[in-house]
Amino acid sequence: MMKARRADFLTSASEPAGFPRPELPEIAFAGRSNVGKSSLINAVVGVPGLARTSRTPGRTRLINWFRVEAAVGGSLALVDLPGYGYAAVPHQLRRAFRPLVESYLVGRDALRAVVLLVDARRGGEDEERELLAYLAEKGIPVQVVLTKSDKLAKAARRPTAAAVKRQLGLARDPLLCSASRAEGLDELWRFMLARIAAPGGRPPGPRVSV
Ligand code: GTP
Ligand code: MG
Image 1: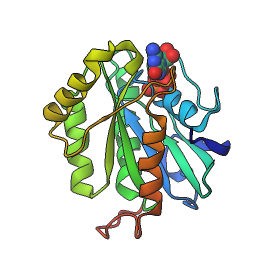
Image 2 (image 1 turned 120 degrees about the vertical axis):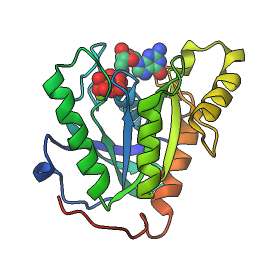
Image 3 (image 1 turned 90 degrees about the horizontal axis):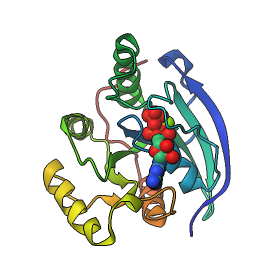
């Protein structure tokens, strides 16, 4: 299985002024609170506890950067974005998430792709559609990942993936991943490595300085 040769916490930021200098191509992990972003980052690099995980939704309130050396060579940064859509997070905090995530997505030239996580049992909702439309408009490549696939019966996996594909109007099948059972991780690596290797990164567009 593909893993990381090395992975380190780089930095975290609560505002654009704290974003690190973009020295590596970045893959950002986005999705609803508690969907399993931090767990999937840990599973994909093979380092439990690298990104902090919790049963309490809203755990990740900052943007966190991890520097990763892929086992096949090449370095990249994985970016753990704060989760959206959790009602119990105080209103003011929720309002702060969106501008922070948006200022990252809109202004980050190093960003090569977003991995959008969707709970396999929950499916895509308005927030996911909105985020997909936003990313499409910005020309940012996306891979949708259905998380916690271990909670689905084997026979339900493919139909669930097909349903989410329809629901969200995706061109490609979503990947089924389980952080706890280490499923779908090679496919996710293949996507990330292809985005890192792609020439040019993001298409030229309006620059927003942050
Ligand atoms: P926020 O930081 O709050 O936005 O959450 P997150 O998206 O980073 O989720 P996190 O990785 O902290 O996981 C949330 C909960 O889901 C934890 O209790 C995890 O143990 C559980 N979880 C994550 N991935 C999986 C998985 O693949 N299978 C199962 N069964 N549980 C998982
Ligand atoms: Mg998290």
